[in-house]
Image (cartoon, rainbow, N blue to C red; front, top):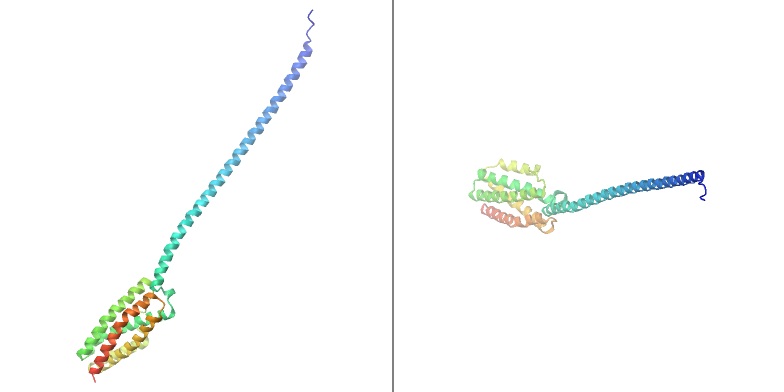
Length: 236
């Protein structure tokens, strides 16, 4: 005979199992939620790391670009500076070089101005010829000095000093034989001084281009001095 079924017991047992199952479901859901939150957190961290890495890479790239660009600029600056120094940039010229180029510029202007006076005020053909030669040669030397100054960015004097201007004004007032004697005497004296100054610069100057100008111009100055001495001797 089949024993009677205890439905009450079955009901309680089923309810208990359902409750436990429900608890398992909740526990599983909680674990899923925790896992989901963990995954979100990991993704967020990964995203932040990726952004940080990108920024770092960008910074490094920018730094590299700057580093690469900087030497190029420096190289250009160095080349320019080197060229300027070779040609005697104002800030790099020694005191002697500056004094020499300034004196050469003013002296050259005076020689040209006085050479032009000889063409109108002299009475002797030999004095006129001497003045013409000196004017021509010093005009060429002055242009060479101006070319150097432009390249070197050096500002040369554009006028005579007070003593030179006075000498020019006094010579300008003379005519004929008086002019001839005064002009020739001045050319002998001035070129003797010029030769000494140019020889000193050629041997002791610091700037290569300025020294080269002095050396190149010396033969012309010596020729002028020699010709002036000849004319002076012929006038006695």
